[in-house]
Image 1 (tube, helix red, strand yellow):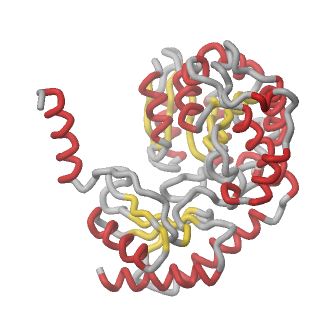
Image 2 (cartoon, rainbow, N blue to C red):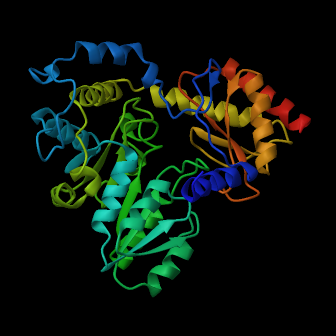
Length: 379
């Protein structure tokens, strides 16, 4: 092999030695306790039928979108859909991106310039980190959900502050202190950016998210809503005012320089929002189920559960190898769970993340908890 290929192989070998090697695996028939399909929309027959029956004039003759939205891939349907989604979330405007990753990278890299300072929660999504790497602004982390630490850093900072957080955190399943953060933003003339990826569909009126649930629509500068989790589709939207939308159309590289989402993707999003608007029992089902899971786990002292009042529940199993062995035992019992290992999470907090869905049953949760208990005893 050449020196170049040897370098690639050495990096892979090192990752294997560290227990961090990634591989792709085919779908299995295990009971789902790991996916982001919180409301079961990706497997919904109702959504499938709505999509197949939906008609958008002549647009459906196209298999693809033919180009970027700035060249040939824009539709009146896309712009109308953006307006409808913005209205659903109680905001002025929105701009659709091809994924949540694209939305975060495009938003942060576009608006964070040399005159701004970005303050970000230390557990923020990797896509925000990548957006910050592309930005020209100074970027400063603060301790997870620690408003006191954030304020101390705001007091010493130069430039216009931007604060970037998740409303529901994907690693711990806990809530950001949104009310306190809004007060800080008012005090320091900061702009708050909220990633609602794991909140939409589960929290707020009709599943509109934590910002809507707390009545903070006018206090948040921008929100990122993804369609690939509770909505069972693909893509994302950045929500804000018309000025932000126009700015992103001009300066968000992940929007400008990519082929637009095809029409069938937009139809899927439209139909998912239609269901979300009238089917009000989904979030109550999921709330009852993750509360039930917590109650069951707390009867087993050997299981250490991270405190969370969301559909994301995590059992601490310290050590990468132990976490993997634990997950393998639970999978062998028929339950699909995945280990989260360091450095994705801090060393010593390795865990099994359990995602509760509206389609899970109490009987399945009973079986899962019994399997978790058996695995912890066997380690």
